[in-house]
Length: 118
Length: 489
Image (cartoon, rainbow over all chains, first blue to last red; front, side, top):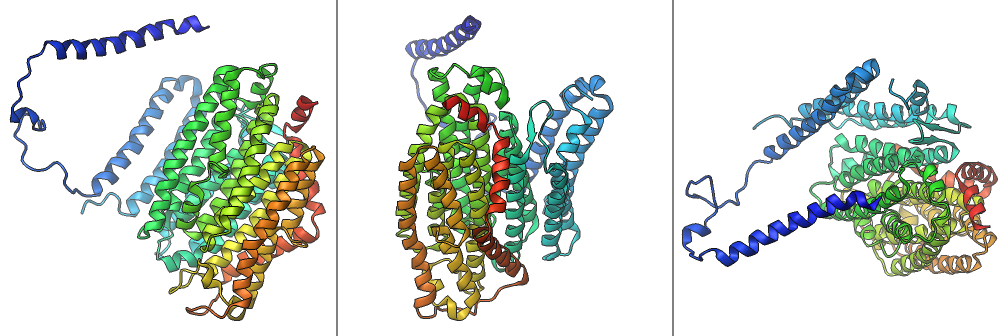
């Protein structure tokens, strides 16, 4: 049974070895020239203008969280769609129940004003 | 319909379905009802009542649902009644508390129902996956509930502490569970039990047992995994603390019994030893730490740790009698603990937080019945006859002596004696000290009902316990206890 894990072990060793090798080898070879520009944070090639630590609206989090919830819902729906031919009516009802529960949550969040962008 | 699931399975999980529907109803009702309406609490109670009613057809059912994902048996039934009863009392004591704290009830009642649903699945689960999903449903609801009073820093602190330690302990528990799965090739506890026969000396299995014991130790707040409990109990909103210390504890014990008695009976020599040590340390340290507390919620937190130690004695005994004694104790504990917390909530007024020892000074003048009820709960927690707490301890220690653990029983009795000091100290404050400051102490109708139920339960189970004992013993017998007893002999 353990022999089944040998490819995984080889993979782990090769992956770790490659990373270590690259780091060590490049640190031995590369020239060392520092200047101020190199230490600045990379921002799509544009010169950074302000500090990255800034306050922004809590709404971002709310919307992001709601997005994640429906994102995960889709993750459940893909495998369901793949085997839908075998699940038939039972699968359809189960999925409708699942979506109904999510919709109740969505309705609640909506009514509580989580989607209002003020 | 896919293989493994049949229509009758949906019939057997009817109570869970009713509760889920009830929880959704509460969520919708919160939007539809006018702001600050007290009707929401009644909708919640209605949902709990409907769930209790839906338990009726399953009085003597003994089946496995969906090829061994859930068991519908009397063991699960007993716990479900405890959870639903505790949830109902919690809702009753929340109404005025939330109003005083200025928290919108909103998700509160919904989360209470979700936590209850998780507990019910934990008690019924005979598969590691279902048990874990139940545990998560309960734990996530409690993480949010602990921090429900948003402007209160302590409440926030409680939520973060509980979340971090809860997540950490779940990791340990999952690691143990994954090893159990890896060694047996199944997640079903009953199949697992047969796979593990003859594997007692396997060090990997011993490691799995240690990890699961540690993970569950966090959940039941056994020493040395108890450090989160006092802070969380003190910081969380008082009704949540009450529900956490009763419901979450009972559910974790149900899960513990399922995993060890159904899944690991062949390893009983190992886990008995671990639980024996845990029980002794938990009782002793819980009681000693409680001696110096001046905050009642904190004192009850340590007392609850000590009680987890007493209840662990039943696991060590492992006999049907021991398990029956645990079930009884958990029910009795629910009454007396919820009762004590009801009094703390009554003490919470607009101008007084009411959870310090000095707030209870002279309570018998300001509100004689509240003082008397608290006296009763304290005597019961300390184990003085004729209260229910005495009967609970009597059966637990009796079961221990029966199974040959005289030492444990003696330590338990000594600990009860220590605990009386801090329980009686509160009584001294209530009856012998001059009146404390603040506005008059009053009850609301819902608090009155909660208090009355707790008082009646504490007295009735102390005076006429026979009825309950038969019920609990019947429930305990449905568990795989027979397998353990056979493994020992």
